[in-house]
Amino acid sequence: MCIIVKKPRGIHYKHLQGDCLVCISHCQHEGYPVVRKNERLYHINHIVYEQNYGKIPDGLFILHHCDVRACLNPKHLYAGTHQDNVNDMIRRGRDKCMSVCLKGEDHPFAKLTSREVREIKIKLRDGGRVSRIAREYRISQSCIGGIKNGSRWPHVLIA
Ligand SMILES: [Zn+2]
Image 1 (cartoon, rainbow, N blue to C red):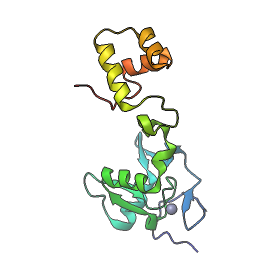
Image 2: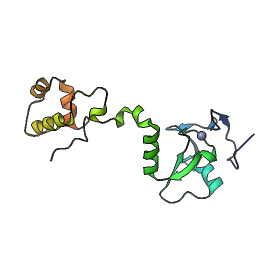
Image 3: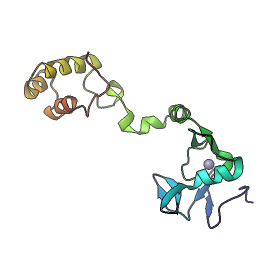
Image 4: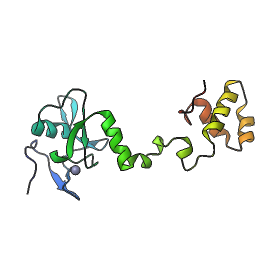
């Protein structure tokens, strides 16, 4: 049984767990199936949404209730804000899987507290040497280097 109300031509689906309809006929961009039209890439889930519910309201994103990016079941699609998307991710705990989102002390490999990082940032700002600070806090110089260049603990700010 096909539960797609209307669907773009030439798209093939595979049923997944639940009633997700996963696109298998088109290539994906960041997990989302896309079509190329007039030298532009269009997300197929946008097309499916618009065919079933009408135009996507300005400024809204097409999100998945099911969290399966390649799913094109219109019943699983909804228009929401970026914040809805973030809330969804938090609810599902997906953010836990993305180490880039883990901050400081929540990170399983955290060796420093936010307070210590703040101290280190102040020392660096005041001209402290990376090697000396690394010894003082018993962490690697590359870790201190990361704090210095902002790739680690960027959320800890000093006034
Ligand atoms: Zn789905």
